[in-house]
Length: 82
Image 1 (cartoon, rainbow, N blue to C red):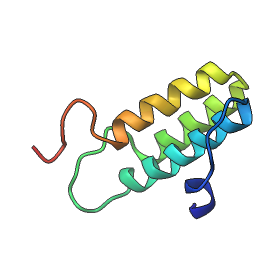
Image 2: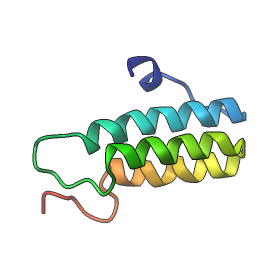
Image 3: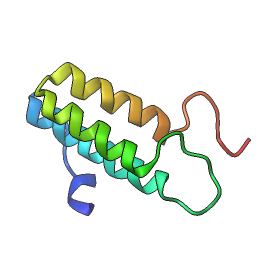
């Protein structure tokens, strides 16, 4: 997990995959939290969605999932604590 969190971004499909792995790790950690903060995905959903995006071998699909998970991970649309 720590390796995935340190992956750099860039312009290639491998770079996009690195960004997805970074957001995926953060999403897994958020999904399995025990602090009572509601996360919109389960750990299984995160793993399934990340795997599907990577398996697509499509940079746009991967980057769309990066954006989606980033929005969930950073509370875009409102803080879940409110």
